Length: 142
Image (cartoon, rainbow, N blue to C red; front, side, top):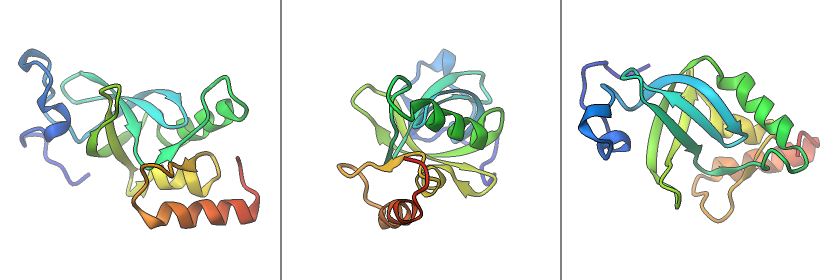
């Protein structure tokens, strides 16, 4: 990962109280997967952050294909060290981020595999539209 353990945390964690502020905010280990577009990151400072994957949308657990989407994200990141690139916060206050595991863009990989959709309302990166169209043509996943 390109980050250093002794650099100042990025804006993602800057609003945390000083006593819980992790030593670095752009990396950590994935300790939980909520659904196909939300994960729990454990930072080097032992703070758990619920991260919403930006640019994508996935079915909720109880919806059709929800479990498969969650399992796909788990296979990509659970128990692994990842890099996050925060872009802001959602309406619930969760950090929005692109997630990278060993150089792989996890957000984009979920769409390419047909395990999530491009979030039309908020997606700005054309690669997500292309990935979704390719997954649809190949009849992968959703």
